[in-house]
Length: 231
Ligand SMILES: Cc1cc2nc3c(=O)[nH]c(=O)nc-3n(C[C@H](O)[C@H](O)[C@H](O)COP(=O)(O)O)c2cc1C
Image (tube, helix red, strand yellow):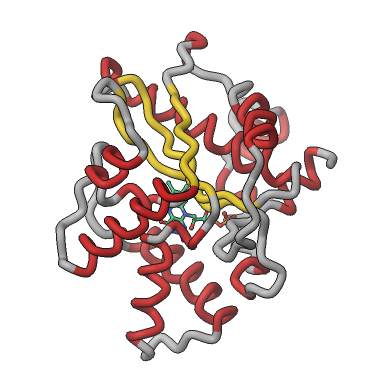
C-alpha cells in the first residue's frame, strides 16, 4: 500500500474475526513500528503481545473489576473528564459509533454493553500491551516516544490487512494486565492495542472519524504572504 492509502484508510477497528494472528506477521509489523523516532534513539518501549488464555484472563479480570465498581488504576497520570471542545469531540465520535451500531443514546443497557466490550478489548484475538522503562517514570518524553511507536504500529498493521484500536480501557485495571501479561516490575504500563483481522459485518468498523481542518490546526510564521497580509 502507498503511504497515503494506509494513513487515509486506517480507522479504529472494534469488531474482529476470531482468526489468530501469526507470530511472524506480528514480528513484521513490530519491525516496521519500531522504526518510529524516539528521543536520542532511546527506544524506551516494550511490546507485550498477549493472546489465548492469558488474554481471556485479562478480559475476565477487567470485566469482573469494572462490574464490581473497582476504581481505575492506571500507571500513567490521567486528566479528569474532558470538557469544552474536547468533550464535544469525544461526544461526536461516540455519536458516530452509536449511530453505526444502531444504539440509541437512551438505551443505557446497550451503551453499557458497548463500554464492556472495550474492557474486553473488543474481543480481539491479540492485545499488545505497551510499556516503557520504569527508570523513565515522570519523564514525559518517554510517553511521547510510546505514542510514536503506537501510531506506527497501527498503521503498519493496517498496511498488512490487520485492524487495531488503541485501547485505553484495556489497561484501566492495570494490576490485572500486569499479572496476566507478565509485565516485569521495571516497566510501566502505558496503553494497549487490540489487534486482529477486521470482521466484515461490523458496522462500527466503517466509521470514519472527523478531523479538524488543516487551517484550524496549523499556524504559519515568517512566510512572505503572511508578512504581506500584515503590511
Ligand atoms: C490514547 C488512546 C486511547 C484510546 N482508547 C480507546 C478506548 O479505550 N476505546 C475505544 O473504543 N477507542 C479508543 N481509542 C481510539 C480513539 O477513539 C480513535 O483513535 C479516535 O476516535 C479516532 O478514530 P480513528 O482511530 O478511527 O481515526 C483510543 C485512542 C487513543 C490514541
